[in-house]
Image (cartoon, rainbow, N blue to C red; front, side, top):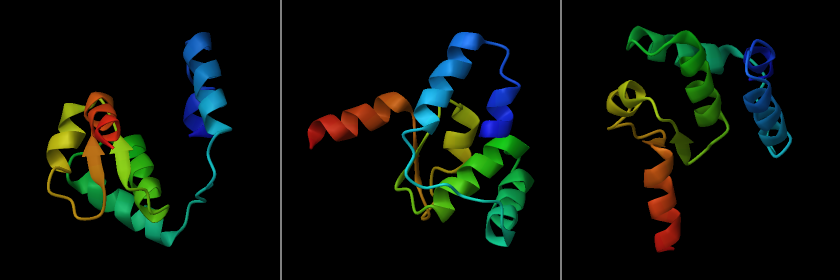
Length: 97
């Protein structure tokens, strides 16, 4: 995420992502499990950086992966490893609790 954000051409978005980064409690380092999962997601047609984000979320035992990318949502719809939702779907879930 840090590598990707360094190339972000939008200062406001870059700053916001940097702030979110400091809220994280788990830092996933590239390893064989992450790379294997990311490679499998890429074979499904998911873009490489998105595949890495998704793999890291799974390795971190995240319950949810939020994205506005419809393609990722469709590809991961039946995943038993993680729930892939839009931010609005996620808000609806947490507001029900």
